[in-house]
Image (cartoon, rainbow, N blue to C red):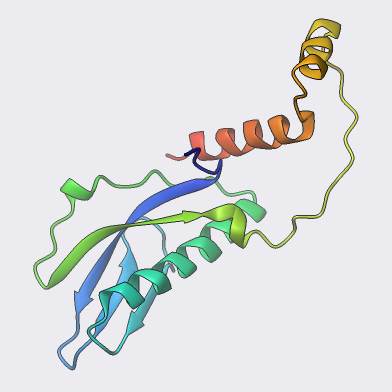
Length: 137
């Protein structure tokens, strides 16, 4: 299985609330938090995934670098638990409209790409996505 090019994972802390449920927050991304008022970690993970996707998409669209995820082993939580939340950020980017670009590549690359039936737009998009993810930290 190929992972999507903007697929990332970040640790989230699930703080147990006295009255039940969890306050859920990202370790690395300010403003990425949510909560649930019931003891349903699976629902909390879905909500954390949504807030992570929306927050990271907003950062990318604003031209901000994505932070490097903290190693889960470096996080100590006494009143709850820590888990990784994974998301394909591309699912949350609002402006997916296509933009026509004119570019130049060597003839040999064009010939080989055509022979191999390579989608040049997809290759360029994937390469840019990898650069965005690679700039974390």
